[in-house]
Image (cartoon, rainbow, N blue to C red; front, side):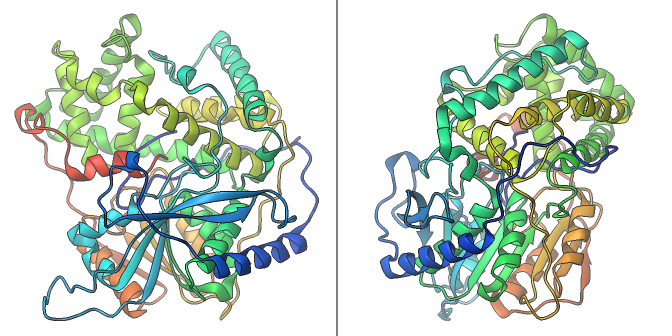
Length: 548
């Protein structure tokens, strides 16, 4: 599953299930926790001594000179810290020291704020640029904003599973209730994809895991000269942030987990993906109801059921003839799936559907057609996503389990269920040993108080995950944006949420164990002529800073 991101970034596929615990999984790697802990300490000491030599960034980042880039070396295998090393790319914008509310006041620097936008497979290299946005200026005054590309992503020892020229398959179908023939074809694709990951990545494939992402984060902390880490992770970034907090609680200064993955080992990752598909059905209903309330603008139906009928009509038309030769039902579903992550995408998607049904396919093609110039990035992100989730834990290896659970779920949640299942199906046929999911948990006083941010109707990371994260991280505080569903809410449009975020990161202040904010205003319906002027700055940044 793919989506853009800004405030926080898209995050990983997640879900509760109808199913029993995954069974018949591939062999797990031996417990080498002690050796890996020692290897992390060795790598961190070396990184602190070496530091990071920040200079000009690669030209293709298209970033201003204020963004500086460098690299940090980490072991491919932490159990063997003297073995093969890989280099992670890092970006930084120095603290401005400028108080946006008082130009005469110089803000003291508090260190670095490291951010991860999620995925797995998303790069945070452009994150430091958010410091120019009004919602981030106070934080950018006090902190060096630091982003990075995790292992496997972009230039950080990139992973690949197929030739990027063959990654996009468009137009494609998106059946809510696939036939047996369609299922057999997708099983064949999943097996081939898993073998492609092994063929193109070789023995290094098994080392792309969430636990190694957490260890890399500690090496990065040391390379930045920080004794304790100030970290903000969104979506999947909350999961390995929680792993970091469990492994290295004394290395944490402050930690924000925005849109939390359910860290229960029994949920990671198969059950989490089922729960995510169920949650997207509810968010799709929210979107359809919004379109119906704005029928005067979009003319797609004045009830959610009528809007669904308009969507189904478009999907059937696209199945017969792809728009622009590239947009079929699969691309339509992908465009509307992204609206499940971010409600500020609602107007553009509703407008595109409305125009398509009236005979103008251009807005839909502009939103949904895959672009050849993004194929390499998309293929890389998908490879990392797949490798990390498949490596992290056990998955069902019998197709009957997948078929049973997703068939049941699709009866009540057809919008995303099978597309989600087929995206993750390579994990059933994964060719390297799995790890065992870490039991995320900290006791009273072990970890500094942490802040969890969550929208109540978030589909990508359902709310139950935030409650579980809050329960498992002792002394953590949960701030809920009520009756809202945007994925990644820190630094977004909600001033109440941002107030809690700034109070914590700037002053270390937190509310009691639970607090809440009213949801941000729904987007305004825009007439076609208004929205045709182009993407907002936020939409452009979302497309560049995240995926899942």
